[in-house]
Length: 50
Image (tube, rainbow, N blue to C red; front, top):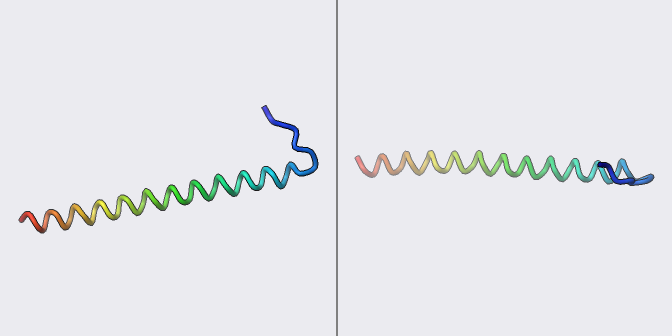
């Protein structure tokens, strides 16, 4: 169901699109960093434990 946005439909939908893209990008970067840091921590722990 699409609300009537009038003459500003393009601007409103563009703002939503950019916001969603930024949120997805930040989430992706966070997940990638989490995986990299976790792998580094596991590597350090292996070295410490023998």
